[in-house]
Length: 228
Image (tube, rainbow, N blue to C red):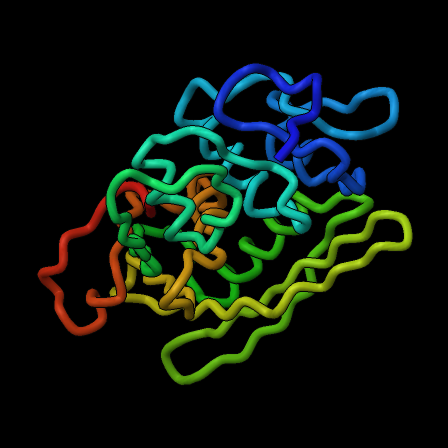
């Protein structure tokens, strides 16, 4: 792969000639990306904090043409990209086997009193991230004790348009103060990163703990404060 000549030196880069000016990198990580005079994006600064790494990860996942690439060899980044199904952006194979780590369940304290109110808040968060080129569609259905929330993203850039598949998220109360959110993906992180970002930003959601799907049958499965 050939990196754009303006890319900052480091592990992440934008492939030269691979950009539709979709604005996804600017939406996800505006402090890390910039445009050149032809509206081709490039990495203007490498991530240096956990927050910036999360921003870069979101940008990688949202880049439909896989233009944002990783040429480093950090095992944690390999694990994260394997878990999200984005390992194809890596220039080099890892020196050791890397198993995916899919924490698709999050439990957290909540001040929301109903599943509909919680789903409304999630949709409002997603809507707040929309741009002229990127937006969401929603639908939902309810059962006696849970709500199924579906969303998908639509990306447009000139004549190019991509509509993603619906992501399915099951939401239910564990008790009157704690909620469980499960995304229905066993092989990839799916919508986990955006759920994590929403929870952090919402002052009615507190103390998230992330679990693998084993949590549904084994209450002793350990939880983690980060999904990857």
